[in-house]
Image (cartoon, rainbow, N blue to C red):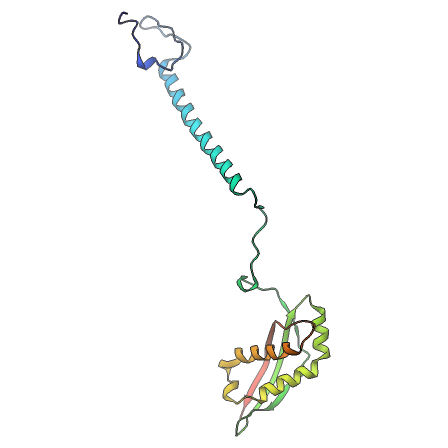
Amino acid sequence: MSDEEGLSLEDVGTGGEETAPEGKKAGFLPSFLIRILKWVAIGLGFVILGVTTTVITFRIVNQNRSATALPTLSEEYQATRPPLQYDDTLEEIRGVTSDEEPGIFSAKISMGFDAESKTVAFELSARKREIQNIVFLYLSGRTKAELRPDRYTQILEDLKNNINKVMREGKLKEVAFREFVVAQ
């Protein structure tokens, strides 16, 4: 073996180039262009491999999930609730408090229920006087101190629970004051 026929590491992978005398180009493309194309092909292969792996992984992970199906949230975690329908047919309720020196109260309330529930609206209409009496007895059993504005939330919750106890067809979602006054 002579030195001219020795294996050159720089020519590895360049294909079947013919050896040419110095100053002349051998083969179709120069060797530096072939090296650049080789590295571009390797890089492109890695990109294709990465994209393929990512697509396959996402398909396996999301195999049993529907893209449009969102998890349902319970009512207590929903940001907004659906609008309620209100019944404002109760007349103004007036009475006196249970203090030793009684105060006078006047209340107008609205009762909120699900808009789709027509049976609740009919039952509220049928129980109008009974509900008025429940509100009257509740408020007249309290003192002026118990009917202060800082207790309104608790009063409304108690009224809702007391009214719901007599309801058969559905339940109230909310009771709201339209007007509430306690005077000496």
